[in-house]
Image (cartoon, rainbow, N blue to C red; front, side):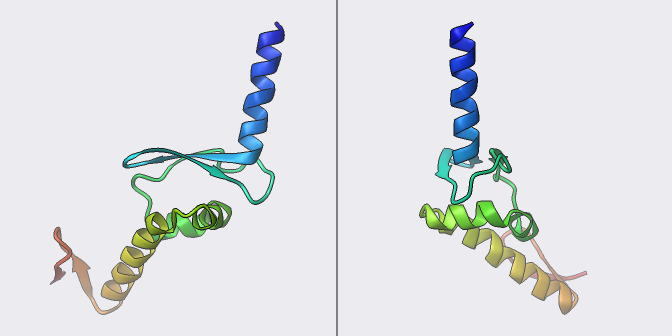
Length: 100
């Protein structure tokens, strides 16, 4: 029973102080800048611009931990997609634009 209590305490502490992030190349443990259980585990493998906008705390913590490149790529792709959509274009495989 003591082991269960200890394990539970460690998991709660970890959840309040770290994000466990699933990325394309494995898992990342990212320290939090604020204590909360929000986004304790996230899978960012298919995240886009709007996903990062919905999770500002995680975005800030990823940038602070030196993982800004993962955020930057998704944000850049999202901005390009929005710009193309605004002028009636869409992206093809290989990042080429084509008319709808």
